[in-house]
Image 1: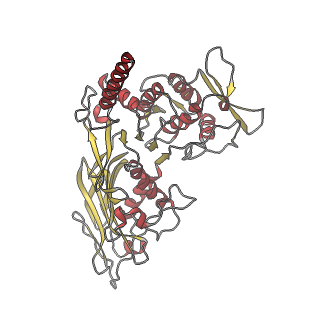
Image 2: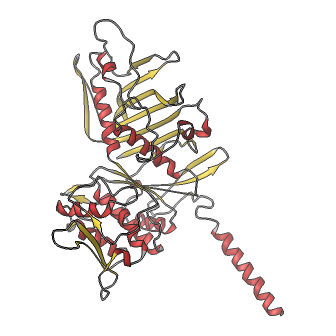
Image 3: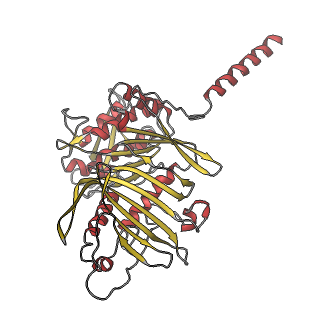
Length: 461
């Protein structure tokens, strides 16, 4: 689970400040205010981590990657390549890490949280390179071990720590190599020291964190009359939801069962999703069936009412196919995942938008195999109805204010600012931003004035 994120000099963001990321984090804001950029940077980090090119500090993308950010100049705030692109990210480790100095057996460093601070600057060929990689291992927010790999103005890299003494290997002293990607000190550089092996564990922890990041975009595939599935297990539902039906079938074939809260009834994956679709008020029943025995073509069949005929998903409203990926992904992805979604409420009726908040509260609290899933949801939204339901659930105690973080993203003359909204235990927002959902009072007043003017005109005729 991500604990915090801070970004400097990336696209619209001169500086975000430290963003606290809760189990359920919601980001609101105007169009083109920079909300999506936050998730796009994380996608760029993930595609860099899974890339086979170790020499590329940041994989900005192409037509075959998760995201295409263009050139490094396109990414840097105000296209000013004289300034570094920086980010600081901290996350909770799946289990506590312990580092021992092999030269000092009594010297141990433990922690369940890790942070990474990176600076990326432009090389002469305008490609990014990492000039600072600063790891911290923390225990209850206290730094127990840090490791700083940094380049000086002369272009020479050094490795040091405030809590740990790196001992050089006996023999000729060679300069340290450039880092691999944005987070990894090379094997050759680690070999220059007798006790730097734990840096590989830090890099592995970073890769594990990024591998657990999933994304669903705002534009989703149109429904199909049939879907093909040959027994594979998709990693996720796809950025456009194109693998949603295969994901449902894979989960069902693996006999996965979920419940909505601890000590509540477990349901098969398809039953679980169908139950939520029904609670959202979209359908009465939902099922995925092969078109014939032994075939790998499947159809999604839906009943909109008790007495309604069973029809294909293509023959009902567009909203069903659009909400299905946004509902399946949070429950399909593995435990300890981070899911970033853009506008999951798109094409949905206001009441359904509100009910979706309940589904997402369930997603961060659900259990599987009698263990918490520990899912984290980060949602970009424009829905006032989603927020209203979230406030209601805080007020009635379904979810605590500490489990929720809400932000308002607004444009400024210098770029973009992110304002944290203060939610109290009663679900009240104590610092309601100006024009959060438009100027409702101005519209209300203008309508009254316009109506009065028209009535006056009608009586004088």
